[in-house]
Length: 117
Image (tube, rainbow, N blue to C red; front, side):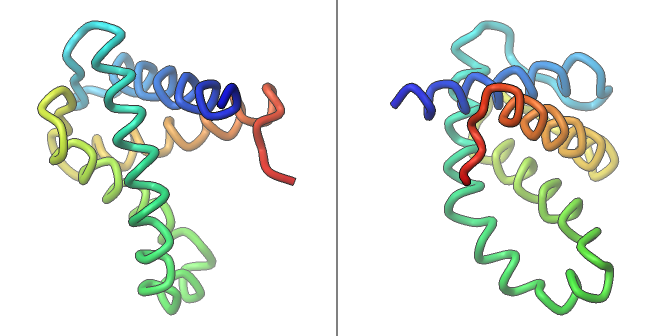
């Protein structure tokens, strides 16, 4: 349970950084908004990302994995559709924000030792 809460906190911090530095990504202020967005984003990643990775396997091979950037941007857009507390204004901001979120969660997970072995 502690690991789950730590991962959600890392995702919330990543979304906060993305909203702070990427024009076109806005979040309603308040810690509750970031907490809700991190929960929705985590659920979307757990349920939808594996399906998208399987369906796009040929594109992933062809682009040497770079198509994952597009998948992550789609997942961020889906999260924005599922909550009114997050708004993403277009593909460009979604891609940049998903890169920031991916980098911050990767660093946070490694620093806190949250990665699965």
